[in-house]
Length: 116
Image 1 (cartoon, rainbow, N blue to C red):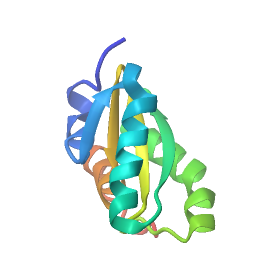
Image 2: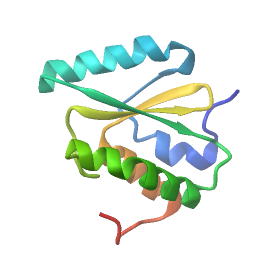
Image 3: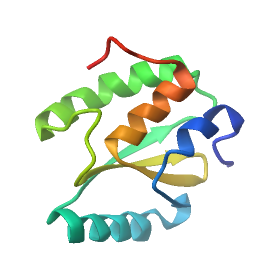
Image 4: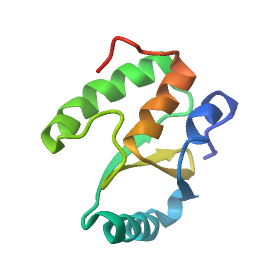
């Protein structure tokens, strides 16, 4: 397995932390504890990104999959707070706040000005 490759580099560069995917359980727990210290609670949404997936299709898929979850949690695309994304890309794990996650998707797929 490998990392994200150059096509996804603008996306993964917006992560606030990273770890090897093989250390996911420990890394997600560590990030959750750090955010709980700031916000009192923290919730990870795990996401799988296939490095070979076309960026526009990736954004469409993730918005469809994540929209109901974010709505149920009352989280917008521009939030920064207790909800974070744990994103598996190849053999890497990247952590994002919603703002960085969706900003990164826009960076690789083009702006989505009409999306909420």
